Image 1 (cartoon, rainbow, N blue to C red):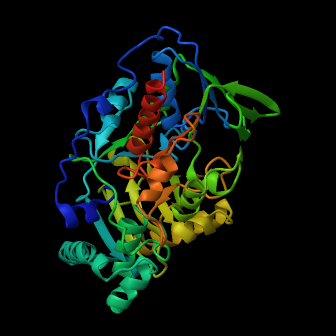
Image 2 (cartoon, rainbow, N blue to C red):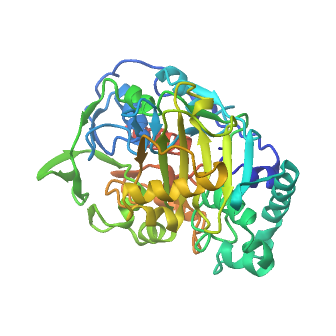
Image 3 (cartoon, rainbow, N blue to C red):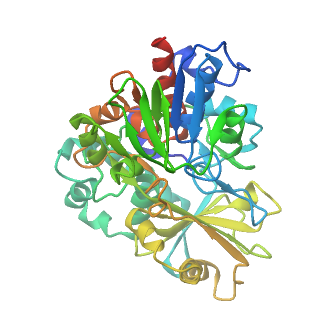
Length: 453
């Protein structure tokens, strides 16, 4: 799944993204602990941004303690292997392998990957009608053109959906176009009814092919976390930065440090889970509210035998947008796994979190039976995510909502009094909503703290 594939191709062709060499050098290429410098840093959150920062700071002589609310490291990089398949609940893909720091990091961590082929797809309409490649390709080309020009008709107060419906009313109600908008716009950005009609195309991409993790994305945070002092099951509830030392309250205990790096997801900041004393500056509070938080949920189903097409992706175009309309054939990457992974986006993704496993399976099977017939077997098991109601994130990743300005990502990244620092994908204006954005943000903040010595 090539995130921002259509937007990137339509607007810029190949963007040759070249980062400064210092940013692309993995924090892991140096081993060991640097000479102690007498400074302590508390990192709130053991996701990839927090771990990247902690490792670099540790290598530069800082006494670093990572506080993590969950019972394992990784944050939104979570892998469930209970069904014998590496089911990545959060990130699955490395988006553009050329020049992407995650490419080297994955290799160092021993994470197995496979290159994906976005052209290996079959598209089915309701009634199990196979759509021709020509029809699908023509619609995709039209989408390229629309995405390249639509922002000219946008404005700061109107959503992508509003502008699109005004310009293309027949397409807005067409099942194929619902699928394209859902899977290649909503999935990559956020809710269409709240997505900025001006900034939907923002966010840079690395070049090269897309690759998917086959052994589990969690190998990266486990690798980064080696040798670090990490306290699990520690929920931070208050950060007081009024004094020289910053005080962090977690599980009824107060810890102090010279600097604190906050790497909690945007959704946690939006829900005021952590109390800041004094309150955060107005610009940062405004940015927290203005930047959107998308929800994408993933569902893995297994069977005793495979009954589906031998292609990488199977698409289905139901009347309801964002609902189980794309299936990843896991067998293409893990040949012994008779499994499909499907998705729900935006409000429908949030709705699934109120549904039982049986209801979810029935809804998914309705689509598969429409494609392959009512005699197909029932699945043997299912795994699912509930990112919106997960108290550790309250959503999947950030996006440019109506009212968002690109400066808001910089405001989210702004340090306070050289004591309180912020990292995470939502603090990267060029690479927001991505794993590499989160990683680079952690490296960025570590450099800031190191420069204060």
